[in-house]
Amino acid sequence: MQAKHMKQGISLALIATIFVTGCAADGSGMTKTGQGAVIGALGGAVLGAAINHKNRGKGALIGAVGGGLAGTAVGAYMDKQRQELQKVLAPEVQAGNISVQAAANNAIKITMTSATAFDTNSSNVKPGFNATMDKIAKVVNVYGKTTIAIVGHTDSQGSDEYNQTLSQKRAEAVAEQFRARRVIDERLDARGLGESSPIASNDTEAGRVQNRRVELYVEPVVAK
Image 1 (cartoon, one colour):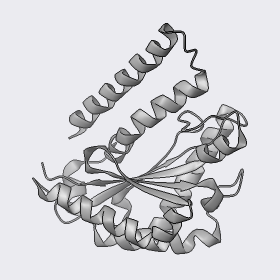
Image 2 (spheres, helix red, strand yellow; image 1 turned 180 degrees about the horizontal axis):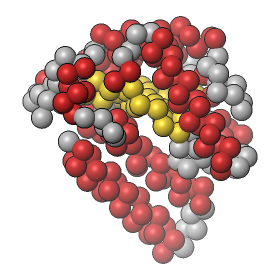
Image 3 (cartoon, helix red, strand yellow; image 1 turned 90 degrees about the vertical axis):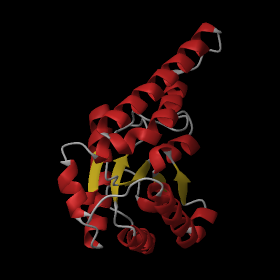
């Protein structure tokens, strides 16, 4: 499964490279920020897969979740879980505070914005976000045959080192929120990517708000 995820990640990276190179060749003059946004959008769908299984034995993971999923059960299991998440998080989604999307490899991508989850330059989850974390944790505990990769991001303000550290702390803070809600540690991975994967322009405050985010990749534990 790791090899499959790696190949898919490489393929997306190649697509992103071709796209960016093409823009330069046709004179469209895509900026570095724009290139990062394209690469982030293409590569993000498989990022969780790469993180979720790093340094983790497949057999141990399957044992921890009580057995993996197989065949057509994988898609059905994840579709149902995504629908449950969309249902319970409907108020937050409608308010624009969070998004729930289908991603590659039957994964579910949940994006938490800085406006609702964190104050600027802070890695402490806002108390007001506790109810949302309760909802997410309740669903992922029901659908226990999954892993959750937690990926922190920042805007480009400040040094690379500072942003990397802040994004890591934010990801770890969310992981701790899950642990406090009885999501077992074997299912969790936290990784900070700093300012390296923007989804919007860092040239405006509106874009920087979008880039200050934490993404959750909920993925199935597959038996084979």
